[in-house]
Image 1 (cartoon, helix red, strand yellow):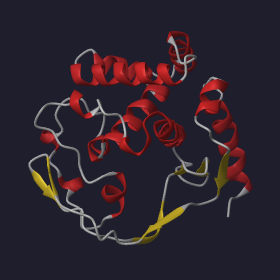
Image 2 (tube, helix red, strand yellow):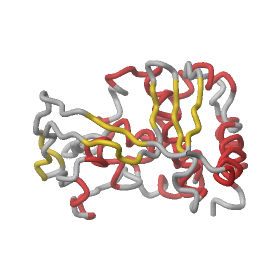
Image 3 (cartoon, one colour):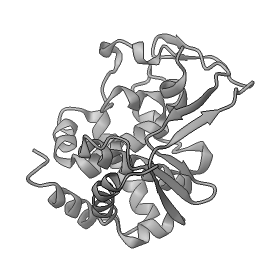
Image 4 (tube, rainbow, N blue to C red):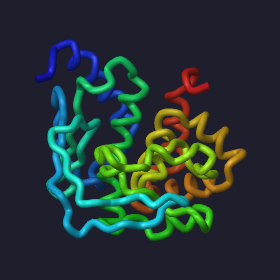
Length: 231
């Protein structure tokens, strides 16, 4: 159940972040409704078709795991055009809330851009020996997953955080969210990280193909909205 304090805190922030987007971009996502709820949890039944695959020198096991009623920071229902966001989650850190909004919204954009298969060129931007992890859901909810134990030195270039390495769709969503919330920091990182620079270029190019109003002017407005906070 959402509290009045949580609603009064979340809704103005949500309106501010959503206001960064051109209306045409929101229309193109075919998003029918954003559902703001107090708390959000998700469950998953075992997947009997799950298989192992080699990931970044570590054998990560994508077993038919299941979980029930686990907290979630957001849930896009791309088939029905719904986006669920919990307003009680992360209230103590507004920056995390902002990033979560843009991360989950980008999953709605991804679905309309690429469908279930995802961006066919994204993975090729990484170094040749890198393979993504077990997926965002497995990384977060499989208690037996070894993903979070991957040594920091194995991150390599091109990733803003470890979660980016869990799956290409999560990598894209994290890059997008940080571009919307910390553009100055991402730009600084791009100057010394060629793989990240090419990922940003790819994301901006495909987004502009999806919605022509996400042009240079859009990115400049985003950057201006973060000053002087994004230093």
